[in-house]
Image (cartoon, rainbow, N blue to C red; front, side, top):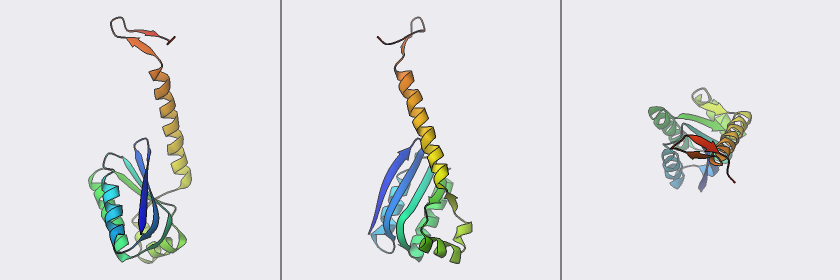
Length: 138
């Protein structure tokens, strides 16, 4: 069984996968969850808790990659476990997929926190349209 949890970071969506990407419902779950993130500019598949993937699962990853490309969405894999990494190397797909390192994701998270902070500070200002005067809240 495959579980996918979506985490939004600004305009990026991180799909945290747990389980196996093997024949059955896993294909549909992963594909449908990825496609539901069509608003994102970056889609990251976190495979830290995926311990097995079969040939059909590789096909699903490729189809998500193609869907993302067709929709101008950057698609990357992250935290690929050793057994999955070996399969990607064996099939030469390690040269096809882009990989996201943890520092890259931390940078994205930091940027998202800074943007939220700026938006919060801006929301504490009152703007009066008639005179374009900015006043501090009481």
